[in-house]
Length: 164
Image (cartoon, rainbow, N blue to C red):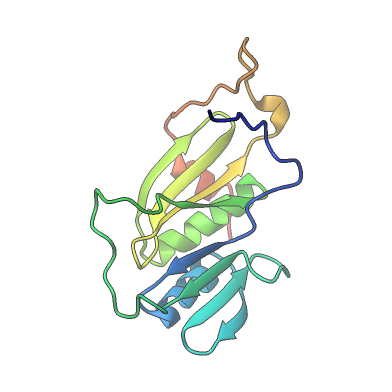
């Protein structure tokens, strides 16, 4: 019999750790395009990055993946890592950097509670970059659940609202 757990107060996702083929390339992408800070290098095989002064929000390593190719489509594995940005302006700025660096978005959506764009990093790892709307703007259904939608997001307007 499976016991239903109602959540764990105080728990949250602390960090993600990705296998990459080329550490320098991955560091350049996450630092210069996404906007993270390089906190620590672990030799020439791993790096730890953060959005602020936290020890790391993201680890990158080549321990089992140096020179490797991305996993083929249709296999199990990580769908994406999501990075929450504090506001619409900051999200627009990072999208602008992504586009200027030549990376293509794989999707964009207005989810009602958030606005999100999707892309793959240089190693094919899926990323979601998003901002939450204020909770006062969320639609709560009669059963108490959130109304989540998948509507088009005007990415060009988002970028135009957030000049670098």
